[in-house]
Length: 398
Image (cartoon, rainbow, N blue to C red):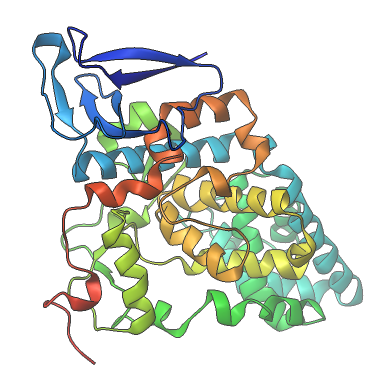
């Protein structure tokens, strides 16, 4: 049984409890609901469509805040952060897809090692050892803070292979990404052709061009590494939970650049963010693209069914959103470009796997954040009236 608060004109508090068996409110022509207010203890009050106009702030313990652009964004940040942390912590949601890629990478590396054992292990150390043996740097998915140069190539190799089998989700995805970007161009093979299939779709030139990408480094001292989960402020840690590794979050390092130059595709991306009241994390996610390329090269992503594709995307959500590097939209927009999921910007349930949605925690998350998980695509209702990014006067023309 799942409980919702629904506006009611006859009750003392202005709203009543409505219980459902499936964690969903009706969505039909005859009866549907929208987020309308928020209680003093941050619970959403829904109003039936047609009864959502006008606002009554209530009195005493029944006081309400209107569900506005700020509430919408705060709820969205909390919902996706909780989702990301759960994806990091519960392997069952994503392991079928993740293990396919990990197994493919192990087979690829081991096949090349048989032909040139010492040369391959030394090359792996030189190319990616520093990502995982960091010398004190706080990269998410690291294996150790020891310096790679102080560790033998054979030990680095063994620990990378072990992490593909038994490591944390962030370690596995960090290896997937690093092998695809740094090792595949060196060792080559038919996997290289598969890796390139998605390249033009998921890695457009403007992603890496500071004039158009739309992000800049925050001024002042860098925020310290932390275990705060997701993309929320540290004050929300008790709600969202923590990750196992302290790391430097992308959302603490970057902010939106109001002076980016106009660019047709970048304009379209940021227009979606503005018009639909979505979140800026650290800009569109290039790492989502390279992870999907790695899954294609080593795991056969192009042959997977929809459930496996959604599982791997949820793993990416764990790594990047749970890890605090990007917002959900910045990652899913790439998956949509690649044709991996059918993403309706702002909504969630359509792109999540049944391994999560049918779980006890998944059902509870959908109900708790129903305003976002199911109704997230209607949050244009709560946008702040900001002009689409391509016609904001602060932007510099080409």
